[in-house]
Length: 77
Image 1 (spheres, rainbow, N blue to C red):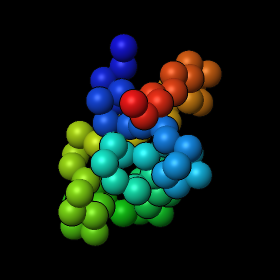
Image 2: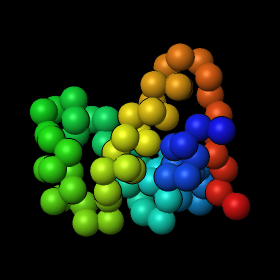
Image 3: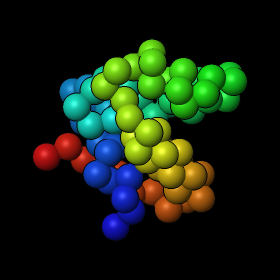
Image 4: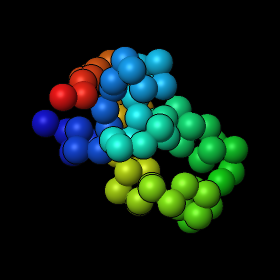
């Protein structure tokens, strides 16, 4: 099992079922977009107090697996 499964979940009732950081409404998509726009991890941590570095790395890992075609969707329990 990938370690991002501890940080990422998909819940159809939250953010239209987009992958999010567990316990937040912060989407993997938002994290990737912010990093692509030039924000640093410290910028994200300051902007989103519920976020931690491990969650950012988990979002990147999840995105990489999704692009690789190894999609494992962690569904909310």
